[in-house]
Amino acid sequence: MALRWKPGASLKELTELTNMQQSTISKVVDKLRRDGWVYSELGVSDSRFTHVFLTESGANVVDRLIRTASRTYRAALDGIDPQHVEVTLGLLARVLDNLRDR
Image (cartoon, rainbow, N blue to C red; front, top):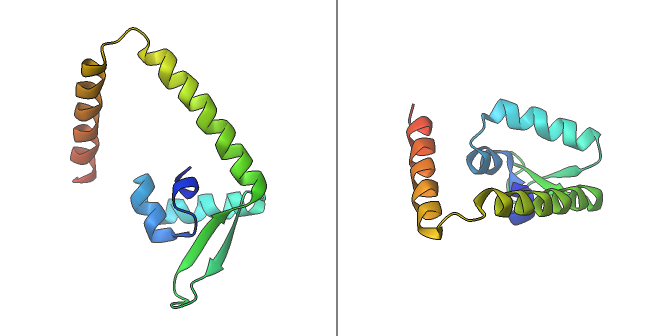
């Protein structure tokens, strides 16, 4: 889904956006490329960088996933005070930061 918000992201950027190892991102991108959901191009100004883009079918899949995740998110938070949601999300972000630092 990171490519929906950052089309043409490099593998390094995808690593940072997804909090995954670069070797894992490379494998995922290879699989998505084989499945026809993404394509990649070498950087124009620096060919050491590979930039990844969604194909039309990949964008369609991501859009469906976003709609499904949005419905699930709304259902999960139904009836919970928005302030409690904000505090909880802040705590979870801190947990992720702690895990990234290790």
